Length: 164
Image 1 (cartoon, helix red, strand yellow):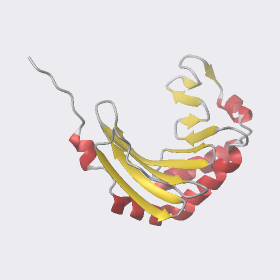
Image 2: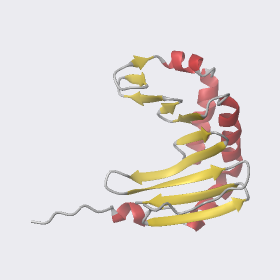
Image 3: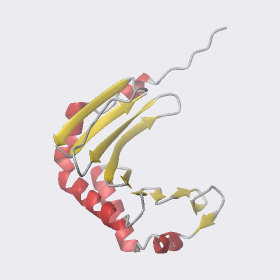
Image 4: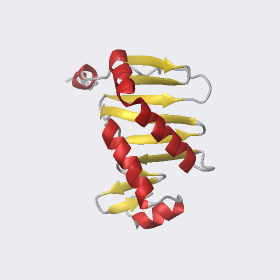
């Protein structure tokens, strides 16, 4: 008996194309720039910082509460204090993410990525992101990607969809 596991074509069929990425950026450009400015300001000296619907810094929201590691829960207030954020600032992030349909904004060193679409990933899936690089942005197809779309908006703004 031979059993094979392959990527889900349904995810690839609904992947955001280069044209879709351009349309999404055009529709939400000011909100993406605001998210970039916010996460850059709030990251302070951290090498990596992210805010999302179920993420805040190194913490994730599980069914039973916020934790860095599942089972070691702490209050949202403690997390906000750790990152010097207010509840209203977190709400500002969540409002912008909701308005753009994005799930998370992440800053790594000086680069910013905003996840605007994701599907699958256990046995194949796609991730679409808007990227900002303070210098010149380079977009390259990862070796593992079966399907790849990219779009440059400006020298330092672009988008890509990667599917495995």
